[in-house]
Amino acid sequence: MRPTVLCFSGLDPSGGAGLQADIEAIGQSGAHAAIACTALTIQNSQQVFGFEATSKELLLAQANAVVGDLPIKCVKSGMLGTTDNIAALAEFLREHPDYLYVLDPVLVANSGGSLGDQATLVKAFVELIPLATVITPNTVELRALTGLDDIEQATHKLFEMGANAVLVKGGHENTPDHIRNVLYADGKMLAESRCPRLEGQYHGSGCSLASFIAGRLALGDSLKIAVQHSETWLFGVLKQAEIPIPNGQKIPKRF
Ligand code: PLP
Image (tube, rainbow, N blue to C red; front, side, top):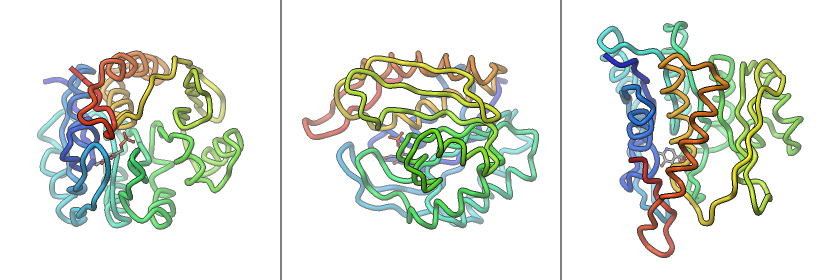
């Protein structure tokens, strides 16, 4: 069977982000996706209306049901929703130190809607940071996690907090014609990429990128190659993204 990525992620009814993005991206990467659902969100392509988080017990029961059953090589987390769920994932990862782990530190949706209490989530993420093979913050999340405005300093702080590698995604920076991502490992820059900035807002771009990286890592790529593959793939699926309604965010076409 194909190597498996076990995703801890929430359901987004629009199918743009969350666990559907994970399943589609990981399928496209060549790996198999399994899901432990962290929350059911209520949202569409325009906004988040609310969510109900899974209990810690139910979350761990889902994950434990597939351990030893599927060939899990990597864990990927997206929306975790509550500090209880973050603690449960940390406990799960400590029990499985052989799993690679991609931490996408989701705090708010791209539409701006809340996916949990930001202040308490930020404090709880501290426990997950040293457990991750790679962390994939956008610059808004990077600043929130570290409390620092300067990107270089904030990245440095994440390494002081125990990070092993960080992919800083520049989509939220004021670079009108391009997006620059930088991959750091062990505190040093490992790679840099630039792509043209596509027009519009996208729903689930971060989930898709982190999941494709997790899939490629599960298949044996090095981190640098996994990130390169994923950025190329993401640019293609965003280029062909579909807009459901004039005010909505575009939904990546991952097939
Ligand atoms: N996970 C869920 C369940 C979501 O609803 C969202 C955004 O709406 C995200 C993750 C993060 O999405 P993005 O990839 O757009 O950052």
